[in-house]
Length: 267
Image 1 (cartoon, rainbow, N blue to C red):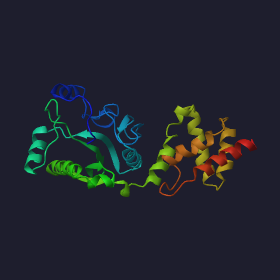
Image 2 (cartoon, rainbow, N blue to C red):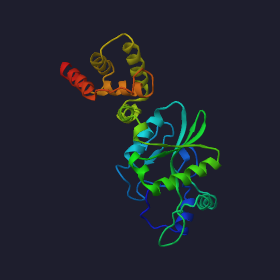
Image 3 (cartoon, rainbow, N blue to C red):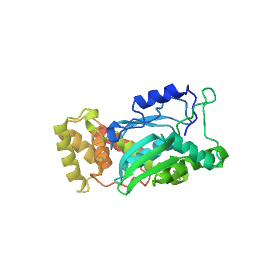
Image 4 (tube, helix red, strand yellow):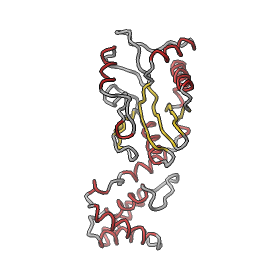
């Protein structure tokens, strides 16, 4: 429900519908809003999801952090961000019943389409998440809009909740983001055949208690990989949960990079 600063009228609304915005699932889903549509608080992000394979449009640092946690979770099956509440007749009626002013464009007088930050499919059914900084919840107008959203999803019999920074582990999100940089080794120039061999070798040696520094160097030497590639093999396997790593604990990236530097000096 970010603030709109673009031209909005019925023609734009119809155009969005024709473009398929807010429709589809998985890789075919198109968010109602793109990051380039209007300015947003914090850093906007475009992130390719592991579950969907498509680019996700995230409007704040908090949304991005929460997205990485959702994309990592085995309980989450699909993620649809900037999900529109398209039944305008119903949602306007909900607002009027609650005696809350529904948002309309000042120039055109056409009602805005409210959006939920995340509509997710889980192993326990669908759920909707609104991401808000806790400070925003002190704003009466934001609380009113959240109440409209809550009542809308309640009518659809879909679980809805607000999540703030107090419920998002930034450490976990940061760790997952770091590991995700190597989720596709093909993008790092390693062929599929070599990936299979590297991954199998790394997993087998990792269970033998070999230090990471030695294992990085071994893998790079055995498969003629560029310096630093051993670390990426580790990140790749950890991201896809092929080797165990606790993403909820602080991971000292400096230590990892020092290991890579030590391996390079020792080669």
